Length: 153
Image 1: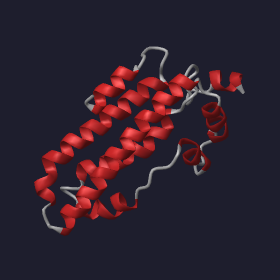
Image 2: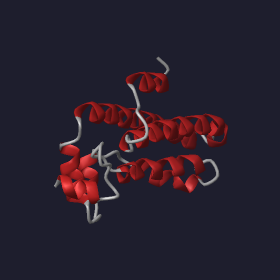
Image 3: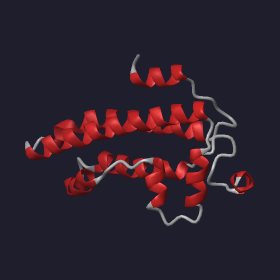
């Protein structure tokens, strides 16, 4: 399996993680960025649910899904812990956006949330960028201090 990981362009050869998992989050961020102009996106925003890394690939039809799951289960623990911390942060921010947008839709004040949503989606993108750097750790290293900075500690 390790040889397959080294040969697979979708899985980091050192991190053993796949950036395809981050697509799950990118999709909801795009909807959140556009919802003030397209309130009809609210149904998709409401329906979005986070999935674990392995559940994401189990539900996927990607040809390397089984390899991605195996690689995740054998990923270096320090990297995996940081990655999962970043995913948890992204999920928390997304859920907060989902809740706030739902309230704003009901109160007919969605446009008033535009600047807040811009700020929140930027923060989510920053977190996802950090997760992406962890996946491609050949060139970059994300420390616990970087994660703490994202959280404002």
